[in-house]
Length: 326
Image (cartoon, rainbow, N blue to C red; front, side):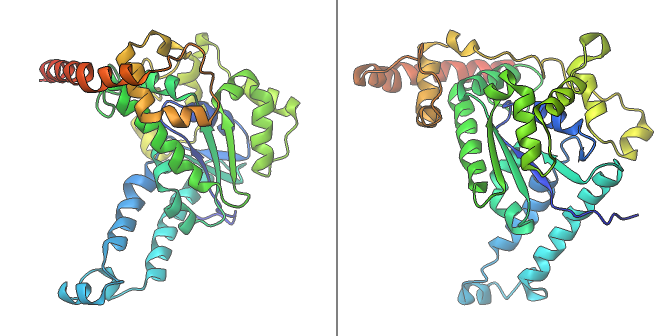
């Protein structure tokens, strides 16, 4: 079964714990948008093959000759290879659309997609990108909390690493800011004025929407806790394929996934603040986030924390973490 609806996917970009799932749920409640749970399509399926092709020494004839002209390039051209990747991804997006007959747009949300924007743009030149940015301190604090529970398998309990993840995702996502296919919004503004911001996003996607329409959509995407709250909403906002349905899986997110109100970074220690400042402080300032209550470090203080106290604390924390996880 196929669809004749055009496949120009929309990608939500952003760092983990930046509100990407909330934005996806809001948009997924629109009748014209089909979106699925994170398929990992781009970064786990397509990107490895794309990287293998790029690893071939096609621009170094001597090196390729020494490698005996091995690799897929010995039988197909780059254009053919990219067409194959595009066809595979398009089939997945086509299947997503077919699961929601009213939909005309397919929406892909996976934070790691932010790290593969050039590849996505090469495969889908007409793709559109919606980038949500949140205060990096709140993102890092949320990652730290998740690292102690449901996210312990993929997050490090490190303020420096968390800040670095935020910075790298935001900087990489901004590579999509070319032409008119990029829309950037702040999590804080979405939280304060959800109807207004959602109407702007939908208009960007070619789905005319007044602020009143946006308000109705936000209300439709808000379930009271008595009805399951945000976890239950994913069953409503997302499309689900037969493999999930036939197994009777109960669709939900782990405890602690939702409900992050932000602001807990104010309780960080001096070392944690310096760690974040070193890994992402410049980008935080570039976005103009409020610096009140954020310590300014003198040269002597930075030297003390960086070269004396920080190494001691890190060694102790590393040994403790290894002991707990062993």
